[in-house]
Length: 207
Image (cartoon, rainbow, N blue to C red; front, top):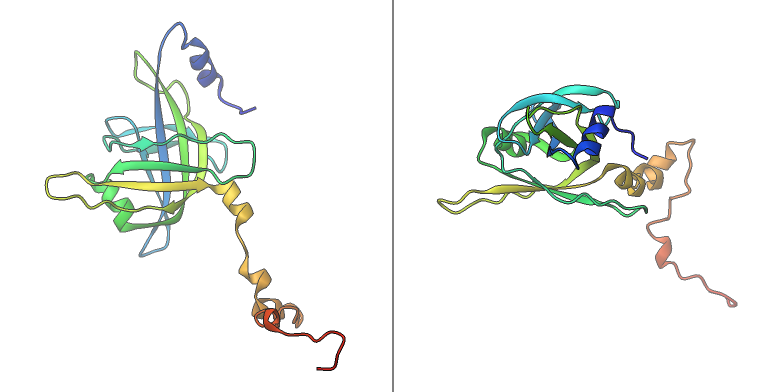
């Protein structure tokens, strides 16, 4: 069972008699092209820039983050599966805002780590009832940029795949490379792996 904060749980339980305002937030950990340092960029489905707490997908501890709003952010359905199939979530947002341009054009988001959070706002105060809860952890798989025609508004659709499942299916070329294996005490197990499939071995007669 997923462990959530007491305030978050209480808000969900009281929603039948009262009301809550659900929102979603996404954090990208992009790479600065000049320094190689990771840069945190957050968007949310609200209409203004805000700072609030979310539970870190790395440490599990609540931390304050800045989230930019008014980006027409649309986060697709998050698959809930019980097997090891790779889950993909689509994140779409407008590229008009400067911060959106900076993320997709100024920074490198190839294979960037992504955290998606569920956020509940109090219907009266319009403030989070507690830290945003982790809904999905993943990494960027692709991020095509739609260049609009004159007078139209372009958007970016980022495909994010499950981080845990993608790591299970990731191959390590170091384990299969002949040069990589040879560094382990002269291991030559893979010396002929590139040609052995074409060998013709005679059976029952002299070659």
